[in-house]
Amino acid sequence: MEEITALAKRRGFIFQSSEIYGGIGGFFDYGPLGAILKRNVKDAWWREMVERRDDVVAFDSSIVMHPNVWVASGHVEAFHDKLVDCRNCKHRFRADHLSSLEKCPDCGMSGTLTEPRNFNLMLRTQIGPMEDSASLAYLRPETAQGIFVNFKNIYQSARKKPPFGVAQIGKAFRNEITPGNFTFRLREFEQAELEYFVPDDGNDMATYHEWVTARKQWYSDYGVKPERLRFYELTPEERPFYAKAGIDVEYLFPWGWGELESIAHRGTHDLDAHMKLSGKDLTFFDEATKAKYTPILIESSAGMDRTTLTMLIDAYDSEAIVDEGGKESKRVVLRFHPKIAPVQVGVFPLARNKPDLLERARSIERGLHSRFRAQYDEGNVGQLYRRQDEIGTPYCIMIDYQTLDDATVTVRDRDSMRQDRVAQDALAAYLEERT
Ligand code: GAP
Picture 1 (cartoon, rainbow, N blue to C red):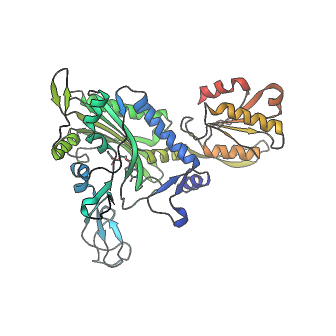
Picture 2: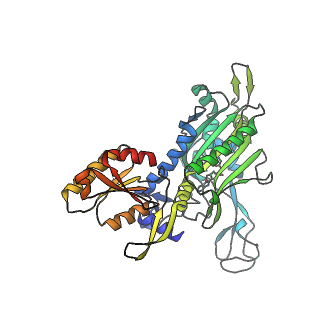
Picture 3: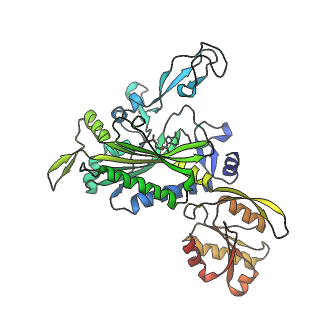
């Protein structure tokens, strides 16, 4: 993990937020490559969950909503961790992280720990000029509620009828007591949520299983190692009382299994709760059958920062290689799936001091730019390959003297390090097939 965090910083994937001021716990920034990596992860989710389906519509709700949204959702009442304070050293602990309340684990004093107290995890803010209780608002701890409160607006305007889904990617905030494990547990993060509404016609569990399969396929399609991924089925005791089924998608991180996504059959709980508090009708009226009902909800809720971190960790590899002279060295390589890789094609001239080579390399890179994430670079050849391996570029194109004679280039494959000679005019098709 240390090697990965160092690489993430060195190569511009992830930086600590506000680093020059000493950082701020639970917040991170994405650098030039990390921003593209995360965007590619989100685009991959959006492509499969929205664009390739005709039963899912897009949504984008505000971060700050009416405070009653969080009363109805249960977050004001129940979204908390239990905390214990030490009266002596003033340190604060999550109750579930302590083995007993006898002794403070930091200062060692006995009898100084308080009884566990509830600590709400929602981040608060103030809206309007007055700082009173009427102006209290929350930064949303999940994106889903924006979809529930708009259920009627959405199905009426999109002319949709269950079964159909609503998808949204957006920021969420949680005042986590113990943020950590790099970008795994954050206070500001992004979720990609799909809320799929189905009629109560006996097919709800089948739809739930279809989504579980679709999500398995997604992780497999984008190259996550199957042996490091598991779909953990929650027991009735582990699920909320209203949920009929639930699965946590977990990845084997260097510190153990951690949740990437939760998939749940939530019954009619969410729409019912908003109807009760708002007094507004959020049922679905079927014009054809004249039936009015509250649809059942199947939810898939994935963390985009955790998925991005997973892609980074899963791709990381370090291997010993031996060059032609028999010298051994270490090669660090990120084996990203080509659709996820921030740079898909690196293009370089063999020598820096030959204007013809530079010009040809630049023009090839410009030609590829509209179809691939291509990057021009120049310098020492060994270092160029080393850098592109470290940022996970699947293909590198070398422009050499032969290119000037016969318009062919060398294409190096990141994983096998095999080099192919490819005609310049066949290059785009060659790369298209492989990326
Ligand atoms: N609407 C359902 C929901 O929010 P959740 O299991 O609390 O469910 C869904 O969150 C996903 O959001 C998690 O599986 C995780 O990937 C991500 N997530 C939750 N809290 C997070 C945090 N503090 N930092 C980063 N990601 C988080």
